Length: 303
Image 1 (spheres, helix red, strand yellow):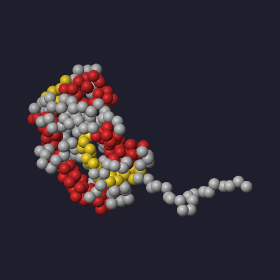
Image 2: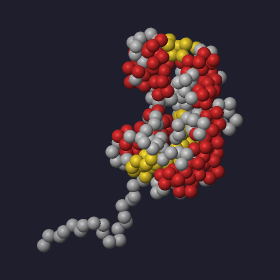
Image 3: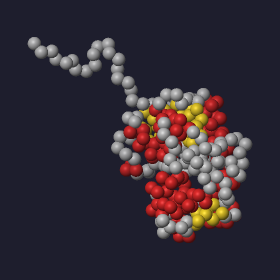
Image 4: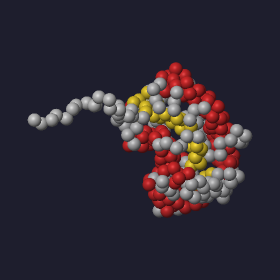
């Protein structure tokens, strides 16, 4: 007589492991959106937190979508309920520090087992750069609350240069008040790879990762890389800070523009030239060189 294979779980057998669920804030942003894709690729459950009114089509199938304004404590608390881990990033604004401080308090209350926070290279409480001060304040509060954490401190995003695309197209120049100072610019995809690893694999609790590209480069070298990618002559224009500010006035909110000028003063002082091995150490592959990025995005700079 043939034996039937029993259906379902055998009596006394261990239940299958529950799928890890990660809350991703800023899920349609520069780092959040590709992080959602990478977590799904790894088989992780993703709860994507977006601003109210966000088009669901901006996110892939298989994502649990939750709407929450970061200033709304009740909505953020509900978004955190039942998740295992969380990725924290907010838009750059005067409210960013307060929003992140509230989020980490709510994450601690919700019992989040691991928080990965997108910080910034050289975050420090005594920095003259407002962005670096606020990130340091949030990092400190996370430590005080005792939430298991990983802090990601990336340098200047290569993707930020896409904002200069119209200027490069129209004038054939890349402007910045930075002189010949070097910056270890980094591709957002490398930040995402480190974030996804920290969120899904063991061994990253309590770590602070400095995330840079494979080389520290000048803006003249960046302009040369854009020239090579587009086949057109692009030059670097070293502008006085006041002229740079005037060019961007009306493009960025005043608080953010003032912070960007502080950032560039930080770069110009040579304080962002460190090349870190952390991308390779965490992900097992080297950080992407800028030439690859500009080759892939040549159309954004082509006249």
